[in-house]
Image (cartoon, rainbow, N blue to C red; front, side, top):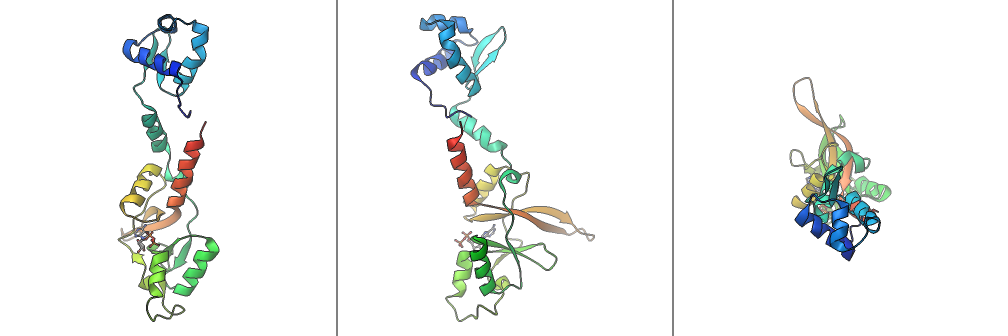
Length: 215
Ligand code: ADP
């Protein structure tokens, strides 16, 4: 997608097409007192940016999409599976001490907690772990399951969900990370969540920067 910084002439062309479209390049050129050849690069840019649409034998017409609408369209195309990272998980019996060490080693701010079968059980954040240091707790003995946020209160996402929806969940629920899960149903018909990834505010920020740099 282009950075969509229109020149004065391109803005004029958009205005003309908005008011008089569908309109041929010859008619636009006439209105601007220019040759068709001079206009060609501008029309190419505006068409490629999705602002104008060209129909053979009909002419140019305004697609009705503002640059913001085009960015939104681009964002809604991206799926969680396109940007997710590998999950960093610990078992529910892991001590607070080992959880802190894992956070440093894996360079993450949120750990996903799984049960003995490997299914999603909870999430533990930096502040959850800091809270423990306020009490008299022995961090080598107390397991993360004591202070983690647990199911069914975990906000999750899934590979096919849009990144836009996942970002909305991060903001609405005021959390830094979401486990990416796949739902499995066991022999008793009970739903279990397999953890297949994680998506964090850092991923969204990176995407924002990439979109800002897109040519
Ligand atoms: P921090 O607590 O370090 O600021 P968060 O804002 O991510 O980090 O976490 C705030 C609280 O929400 C913590 O108690 C944490 O256990 C919980 N939490 C974090 N991620 C989720 C999630 N995906 N679903 C539900 N609760 C979460």
